[in-house]
Length: 396
Ligand code: SF4
Image (tube, rainbow, N blue to C red; front, side, top):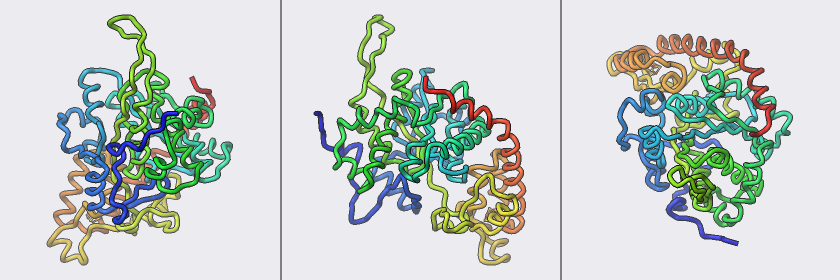
């Protein structure tokens, strides 16, 4: 069997003494300095350094607003777009609860990448719900229907997407055996730390998810938009890519030949901190740190009105110096999710900098956010049956 040491280029080992760990199964939070270190130490590149014309970013509000800050090999996607070649966007969700502010980010990102021309591959990670949360498939299926209805409401076009449940997709279920031939426990420990073996296996199932565009259809560039904490999965799959190829007909010669897989690309967004404290992560133990889209409007309003802001310590200072929208959770909510109109967002930024009081700003934000959520939840009802139908189909 072909066992190889970890590829240090794909998996640079950070200075352990300084203890900067990425945990895809935890809820991390990083400071601006940490983000800089992550790019330096894990080899993530900055999106701002890519030479891309604005028109390419225009359709994707996460790129346009720089919510996505880092990438690996995004040039492959840029090339595919420029040369009108097929490319894919792959993502997924662990169906273990209702949509909240964190899960909303990745789901919205795939819709934006689909608008840029990517074919979507979307995994419902019910094996991971079982492994990580002990949730039986019957229960996670109901969350899967609910979550997929949310994604369809956000604008995912199911005709330009392949959606699967991990537990019913043989191509991903056999991946721990295919990829496992090239993986040692040392390698998994180096990437993920000491974990239950089932989590290592779930990570190998996820390798199958990320390769799905190339396993199912053809070799092509694939971008995986993720929060920075998911980077270990990307490092694993990129390290394993060299072992994967498929037979394709060469259009020039008409002959069948073995073609290597593209190394999956990634984009990274920063993790959304807790609503109640920008210095702490969202956590179920602090109910004011997050909300779900299905929560009562009264409760959402209360959380927004109590949110951490970039306001000054009193009215006089706020009017004199202006607020700091970059440090404000209310502004972040609008920027990332709820204010779709760029000019209105820009206007709020300017009004904040010019001394608008936070109380007034929050009241306006509550209205915008609640209107948005109410509209979303109304439209979502129409997608429940379609979501159930899609998930009831077997793999193709
Ligand atoms: S005015 Fe609005 S955007 Fe500015 S710091 Fe206050 S709440 Fe945040």
